[in-house]
Length: 340
Picture 1 (cartoon, rainbow, N blue to C red):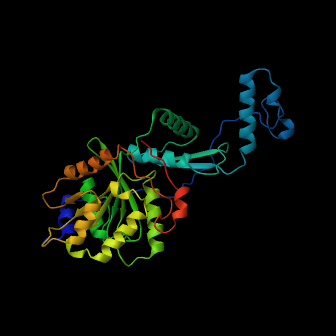
Picture 2 (cartoon, rainbow, N blue to C red; picture 1 turned 90 degrees about the vertical axis):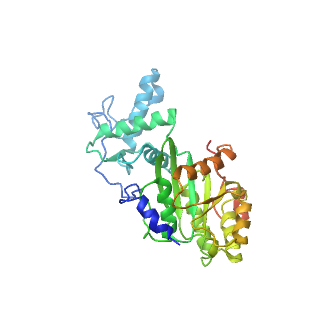
Picture 3 (tube, helix red, strand yellow; picture 1 turned 120 degrees about the vertical axis):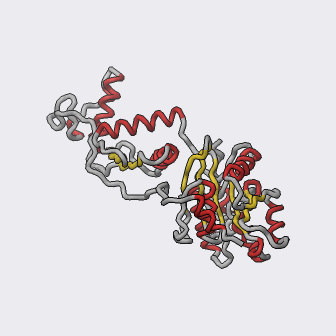
């Protein structure tokens, strides 16, 4: 019997460059448009509260709005700058994700000075900030390139999960030697489809604690925000016991009560004999099962994902912030809305 991880390595050669970079965003103080005669007490001078003209008393609405903006920016100039970083070498969907994450930050003083770094572009200064802000406004009005299929990959082995994830994306996106306790997200484009895979290679291990389950599920939910379209169980016929069945159900119910509508089973070995336990799990997943072999095509597997998306009318799974299995009280406050 051939090892699945061995033949998947042949299909996806080369190092991964698609993993998200979480580097620190640091830069020089940003340039912010302001009056050149600040501090002289003139009409545009807004050095301090005593020198500010009252915009409320101005008869011209346009001038009043302009003065209000100048007063506000002047008051916030000494504050901590808003820092934003985006890598132009990433694909469009990852750039869009960075913009969305930036604007979803809680408790932000949006009047503060703005600092921007564009990786992959040597340009700096006020022009970069204006470009990023105008791009963000355009996307907010016209729409973002959001991935249409978000997949959570659950298994027991780093090498097994990495092999399946790389097979789907058609490249070496996941490292087979990555830490097993870290959930990782990688995105890519397959033909006309945008796909994001959240890889969690230890969640189906039966020896992890309830706390680990809760924390890892929460991490998967955050990485698949606003929710996954498909959850994949990587199972082997010769390694599926009654204990595994109970553990799988515990993990899945930690996502949502409706999780089985979005779940399928992938096996990476041909069964030598029928395993009743794995058959029961497949039945709970509406008999959605894909046997991944050397002759399998990524397009066939992707079509199975698309079928699940269509069956759910294009909606993602509505997940809870914490584990429904352990803390039902959080179900009422932790739900996420369907994005499309």
